[in-house]
Length: 113
Length: 112
Image (cartoon, rainbow over all chains, first blue to last red; front, side, top):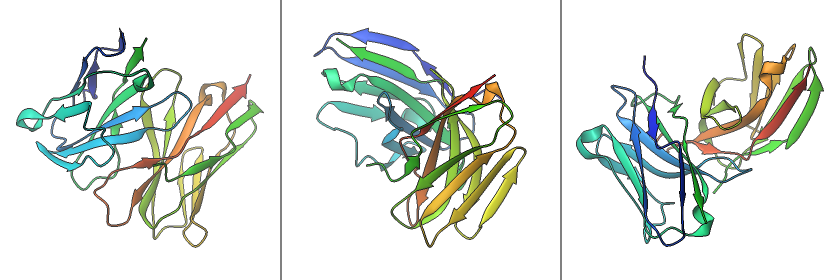
């Protein structure tokens, strides 16, 4: 079974630039999550989708972050404009509806300079 | 906001020894899960314990849950160098949307 795919693996941008991350969840997983993990901390949920609807985006900084999940499969997370404090690993995860276990991708390491 | 707090923050042991990590949380939960993260990689699910369970085993892993104290522990027996990783507890809040709230993690080093 293919896992959660994310790209790119690494990205370096200057502050005030924009960046986008892509995630392809495990086939059949209706629930998709984006987490932000700052160095030395645990992952923090940014947004949760079920199919193409948003379930929870209470911790998404909506002035600069946006996410979409068109057709209920792939998802993109965008940051515009980026700040230094956005430097982190962005993790995508997916799960079956009603299943507690989440499957994580390898993450995208973002460095904002 | 982070729900769980792992303790200790870092743990260094010798191969063959047991490693115990603790997690405390704040609100009522549906379940609690433990994940492992190797350096620079994604998280891997280890074990899940539901709020009505007290203990669960999986291979060399043993998890306990005390809902009255809002705490859990993860025991890794007969540790190996390959167990070196960060370990996170994640809680699924009761009445929540299946989202997971992670703690800050315990960094385990197993020395050969």
